[in-house]
Picture (cartoon, rainbow, N blue to C red):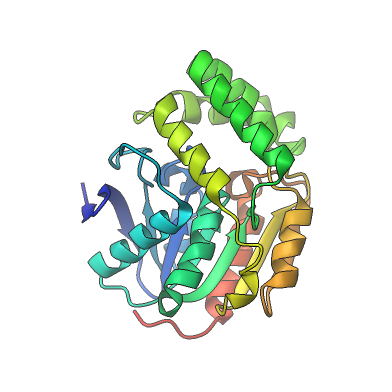
Length: 269
């Protein structure tokens, strides 16, 4: 299995397809498999890179705190390892926090930026919710945690199909690389550390902000702020869509990302 050794530990990654580089950064508590509906579709047109963040999946679990800025440096290190000078970067949720920091700390590496279900910071409600989820993670079984978590990340439409819900539960519950409570807690703290409200205007990369109209974790108002404060950013709202838009409305999400990456500036391969 491919790994990249970074200062904070080993990072697992996968590369598929050819063409312009497209890097997908997963959100809180999820690994590269969260992009299972994107890799086949986008890998047909782009050199698509997915990976497990530290403390989740097949990457190392590290001791001590780290921030989205630290995680952004790790992504830059992975790009160095893969000899990718610049890429279109797609970040979901916590991955969107990381992508914002990457665009600020390593602007030459980001040819285009897609912020999906993301925010400039965690507001008071979001902070309380993340701590509540962490408490659940520490006290209940994986199945109970997933059953309680899914309504926060999917739309009402998603739950109309019991078979789809069963698949979603199975994917989370039966993961061969379950994330422990301590590792989850470190990622939660990384989310709480994120606050770029005063720096959004410094982001120079062409930016697409994607929101789900039923997102409960990062409501559309957060996406509105990102699109308003990042110079030249464009906002797209997917209807009947929750926080986990890459699964909830995969076709719509993939279409937006593909169109943005195709029409964006030429990216060196």
